[in-house]
Length: 93
Image (cartoon, rainbow, N blue to C red; front, side, top):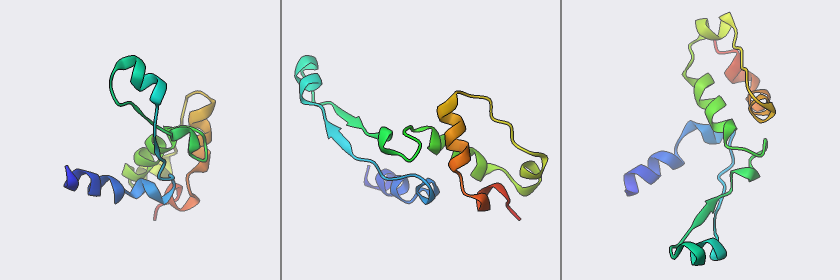
């Protein structure tokens, strides 16, 4: 488990994404008779986890694929995530 957590913390996505907290949800925990935590992805610059997906997709493309262009068809939140990506990622050499 420790190795997995280290891999997550070293992920390149943190070049653009914030490390967001896990918040304990006492009311939900009590209702479900379990300890429930909420991952606060609403604290990302674009208020969503979509930033991670957009970054991971762009980072996986090679220069030729990027040169052909990228079209993203999605809701407003995903659009914000694509716009948030650094220009250096979009224009790979």
